Image (cartoon, rainbow, N blue to C red; front, top):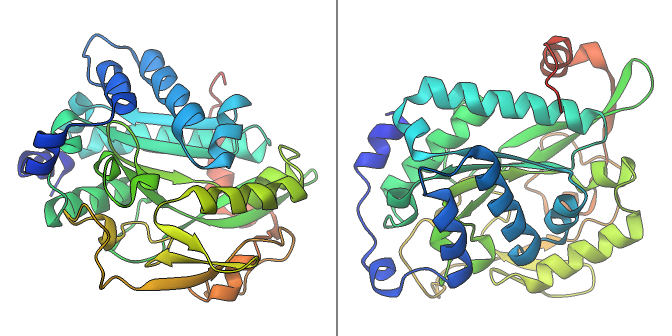
Length: 310
């Protein structure tokens, strides 16, 4: 089903109707959901919120330095059809790949913003919407409770590139007031991608500060807890693109939900072993592979395409 059809079958969340959103989200919603708002106004409102309210220290740093790409898909664009949404998110993806390759961007956030989406009851319908939105960005099938990786590039010499594999991470307005409030974001459903190693290699942050930022972000989260100086526990897998624990109507954390042991990222030079993202020890390494640019059809296509003005 297309996003527009999936949006139509969502049902209102009675808990949200009774409790509303936090004031900081409501303030951004006034801009995001106002049909008179332009793209720049919406992006500015979201960026301001991310810098002020997002617990992720890396996101705050990226916003302050103008190094976070944003793509907001409003309700009208959703209703225009998946073809239009696909074109918009792929344009944003190409722009981000080009800017990250140049060392000018540290990540991207794509947001599907609609009142009916943000106020929807978390459940199978919302999961189907999130899956389809992720598929339009990644241009491949996406499943619930699976890590979905995308390439993050950085120029390394005349014809070479460093490439990291980074997970697509889920955020949504539905986390506001719920036990996983560290994943909340205004507007609706969003995904983000960044590779901390790319930030370090691009000179946007030094390695020691990156490690402290990683620990501080985990410590501030409501869905994770530190277990030692080297490790933490997460509610399920921290990097599932469409995580089922965040797609239920539970306001408090379910007691039967297991904690999963993971390690902090402490080495931004050594790449994880291939195909082993689910292994906890691979959380401690976040280094790149070195490739020739032409080895990546995605990067080659982006660099050959007409450049935007940014």
